[in-house]
Image 1 (spheres, rainbow, N blue to C red):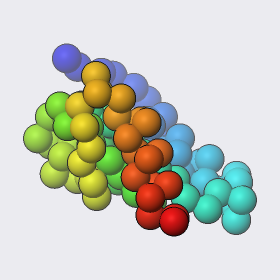
Image 2 (cartoon, rainbow, N blue to C red):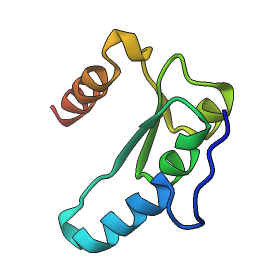
Image 3 (cartoon, helix red, strand yellow):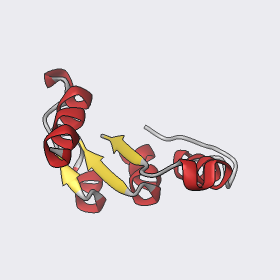
Length: 86
């Protein structure tokens, strides 16, 4: 697929703006994705996750790789962070 969007309006740009607006209140930004439109989001995040069934380009830029989308990827990521905090 092809997506067209105006420069500065992608998911990564939005996350950067959100982090700037929140300042110190945003302690950790986690980005999760599976396809090309998520690459900038994952790069902008403090911790970038690719789901297990993501395309190779997304996995290449991710800090971590989790389970497939259908296997409750977000729940798994939350559980990962909970374990790290204990």
